[in-house]
Length: 376
Image (tube, helix red, strand yellow):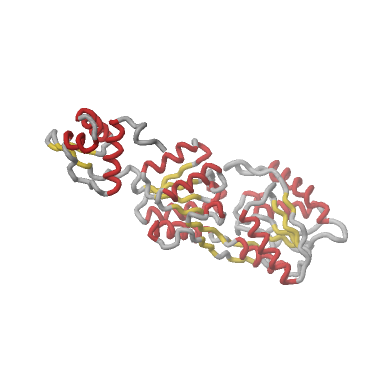
């Protein structure tokens, strides 16, 4: 920490006046001591005190009256005072609108409350610009799930919470334990989905996660699946993590993309789809994966919804782009209720820092959507 000795006399005056204002000893509209009184009180030259006060005046902290007396300026209203910064790395397209439902709901609810939602993409700017938002005094911040794994965002949330501004994160990660968190209850959704497949006759259910590494929400899905299998007395097969190609940004899949991705999945799944120990149920991370897996199963000689059941997620199978190439609905899926997640994010934001528990976690219950009439 910088010592009093290392500061220039002019800096010493500036910082002392700032401390008086911050502590409430000087309030907006209060007059400051005269230059001579201030110089005597702080042990500096009168000219030094004058230049320090001019510095504060240029920053808008002080004002002058009749060109002589200086007083503390009225609090300036930030240009972002009614802005809520929405931190997101996604670029959504109307054609894949189910993914953006949380964000759309948040924007609508904030506007109804008189706020101005402003999007900030940390991938398109430097971390310093993100941190600088704290100095621009916005109404607060809402961080969406797609941005929550960005390293700069994780550090930013820590700083934002420490600054005392309202911060709500769409995540259940312990990395944000100091902030208010809102997310879907992934464990409950996976449990109900697994129970549905079991009730429909599945006895060997494979978790096929088309991601190279596990995230916290995938671990919660694992917990729900394992609980359902344990209760039913069924074997818990090893999960299958697969690094398959994925679309970039808002680009929509074409026939080449869909075919290539399906055949990649088939390569990972083939040993589980053939032989005497083949699986009779597959769980995937989202409905687009369910459609690709259905296509892969058909290539392997298994008819989806007859020879094997596939459990999707997100309840978007009929509107996702992959449906153009594969019409087979999953046997069941889960609606995370993204609109309700958006509403909860705003509701928690409006509670602000006045709520008693700033470390609360809100889990939005999902809804199981069985599709008994699913056909290809």
